Image 1 (cartoon, helix red, strand yellow):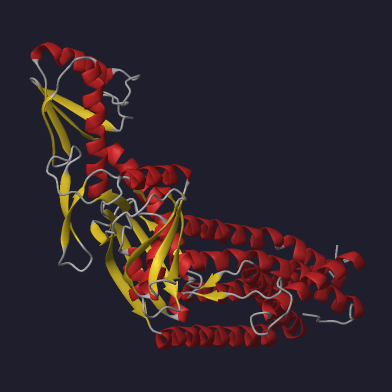
Image 2 (cartoon, rainbow, N blue to C red):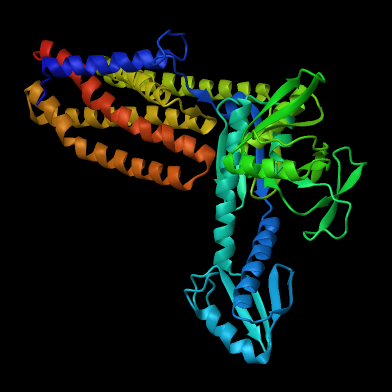
Length: 517
């Protein structure tokens, strides 16, 4: 029935006023933190930088295989089976065994309870595959194993990229997965991405090792260059501790030398290892290695048992800040390569904003004029409800501090059209009812009731399409589907609550008039 209780009228009024207030926070400053929310502009509107990063998983695969071959070797060593000619080439572990041990190894690889959890090729759920040819064995990652490794690396890299960007304080970054080995980074408002690129391009793999001049080092020695690219030193492959043992890192100014340094704090395990290493290595040089380059190699003067230390290397305050940030955020599981880069200038973003707003205004004016000419007073009611519908939509987006993109503006424009379409269906149905029903109240009530099915069917199918676009589409498509989906709910509210309430109030006072519509 065309009846609204006082409680329902108050509810509709309060809801409308609430969202008008929320939406207006985009134009005015409020002291209240809840109402001090704004819609964020996306990269295409605000301008900024777009980076597409690709994860180089080859070093990860090589490292995993190196660890795995040690597991295989130790496992069979316990069974007194000696592997011969084992090596890793083109990401394949190969080794040979005596003929008498071949069947034992095959049986062991089939065993699901094996310590290294390797199954025979017919088990499709395993991570590695093994192929035997006479006495030679080849072990390598299966296709599924490679997919799992890539997904794991991507998840880790995504989290660390987010930490690094958040530490810089970039406004509303958009960081998304692309496939299983790429990461998309959108940085609205940032037109100079050089510092971000520098930070994201570093793996930040930190290790502490002794400088060794002896070829008899049981762990092996490798020659590494200093950051200046000129000096070099022989460094033991033995890792005393790594960046995983760091709890915190901060840039500081050394009061004694007046030099910018990076101070660090180790966890309990790292402090114990560091204390032991510095106590037994007094007089030795301790190389601090970052991504394969020596930052500094100070001489150990005394035992450091507190778990606190500092890294010096001729830093500026900016480079020390960036190094501390890298160490705090953790090392990337694999190197990241920038394969695509775009910078959208603020002028282009403003042009997009102007074009979108102009299209919205033109479309809105045309719709308002059409509905006003076509339905007169009820067109005026529809237009008022349409304006409130926009406030509702913008208010919801503001509450969630959503990011508005150019496709998002297109979704708002489409919402305006859909809102009018629902009212047109209702009013045309009312016209049909008035031909057979003299009581205008009954005719209007029947018009709203009988048109409900068609309106709900149209909006539900559109909502399903919006949901599919949101979960299956990329960033811009998500923005369009989000505004469209929210617009469907606000449209139904404005049609069946706001516009219907105003219609009831009007016809209740003018029910004796003829040709109401």
